Length: 233
Image (cartoon, rainbow, N blue to C red; front, side):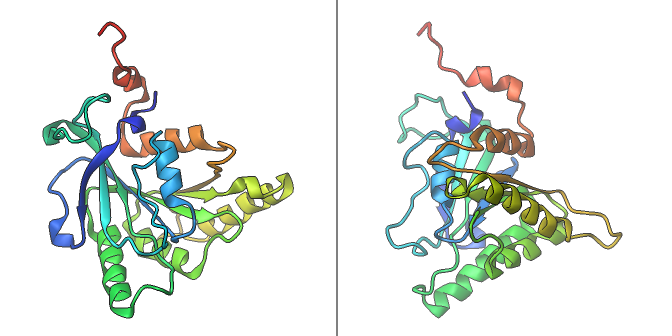
């Protein structure tokens, strides 16, 4: 059982000043409102409704935190999380890109996202969720360019890969890696950017994504047995 299956809702914030004072590593999930971000989080955590997918994409404008550790797997969702025992946090950032959101909300949203990904010291890496058929929109590139100067890893998950044939999958990966390789630091060195294909429907790439996120959070996969329910109880 993956340690990500331990994830449970921790808190939600709408202002940077309300971010939790935890010091454990965080991984943030970002992406367009229709790229399948909530579905990917729910599949990776093996929970149907952990990340909320609004019927009106683009409406959710809060940063939602999910804790890994600090609670027993079988513990009731309403029981308190032991903050001191949290080992890592998954962070669901607001989806972006829908015209229905008001101009004022967009400005707040943009500042919140930009400030969070650029300044949050606890943020270990960014998982950028993109539709494999329409990757690297202007807003995706903006997110990349906000985060790249931090020098931290970005792992791109190209969703809905079941919609592509084998040749299209190969080309999508090649083109995505080419774009990511074009980002270099002041010394001409490439950034730690990686990419993979993913499909919730066909369960493509789930183990690969799980392993990468566990690695980026600095969690030990050998400890995953400790997360298994005790059959003796």
